[in-house]
Image (cartoon, rainbow, N blue to C red; front, side, top):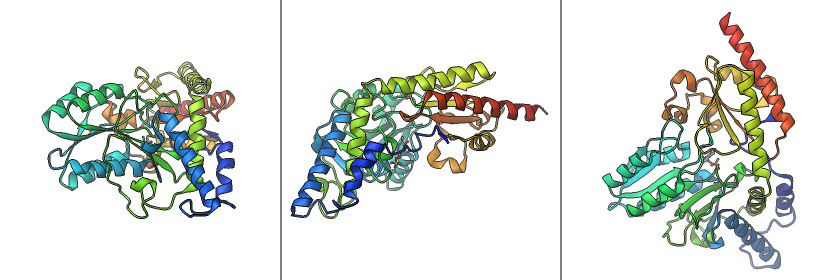
Length: 382
Ligand code: PLP
């Protein structure tokens, strides 16, 4: 299989698997116990905390381990409700992940007010509209993704933070797709909360992390045994946490050692080749700052669901819209928010790379896509 769906989930890196295995075998102890083996598990958790902190320029005590990105997002949205009734507004972006969209819906149902900041044709948050929404009503939280899972579009995070803070609002960044793929530094761009997910960065599913700035008062979503400094109850997933630390360390290196650039080069090669091989293909958000891992391609006149089936047969794994809910194959709300009509949104596939892909795979994927699209267009033309 040529796996071009790393925005959906990534493979577990070999060194990450090696690092976590001892904690599933003989070092299975509870890190809160009092014996020597437990102290060693505790040290492993704390080392992972430092590694995750280093990836985003945080202090280790600002990192709370969670079960996934979704948990971090829900925890922040729930905690910030402490600002009600003085500040009841939540502002989210139009292209947020379902975790933010659904959590905003819950905010609304519980008596808060959730509003949506639009994006432009390139998928970039409209800062003028955001400032207007902030001026309209006292806002508790601006919750915006740092990078989009479908298009890779990178948000103007510094401007968003400045606008929100000037209006007295707090900022949560969903950095599930951004971390490790572009420089994310919480001191330079002082977001108040930031969510991360292990399985998007070559750790396994079932672990995530939440950055909570030391400036913030945080109400835990899960209460229990007081783990994570009382910020997230529940016995620590030591193996997962160790994996996340190891994965974060590798991502920190990948940002500076040319790996990120090599991945971006594969993506660019793919897009350039498709444009020469096929008439009428559109690279969505190509004019916006984008992650180097992601390509959202519209093949006008071609049904994305059919194309997915042909590509699957040819051994290429990619997705239509957001893979997290692509089984439903609804037109993507991300593409619609960018002004694509239903027909174009329904002719769009997402391809996403990681450092485990190769140039050869990329070239084979171009062949497969070009063949499948040509065949579908010929059939449609009769
Ligand atoms: N936010 C974004 C941008 C995502 O892409 C995803 C997963 O696809 C999530 C949040 C949810 O992360 P998790 O699967 O770890 O809950």
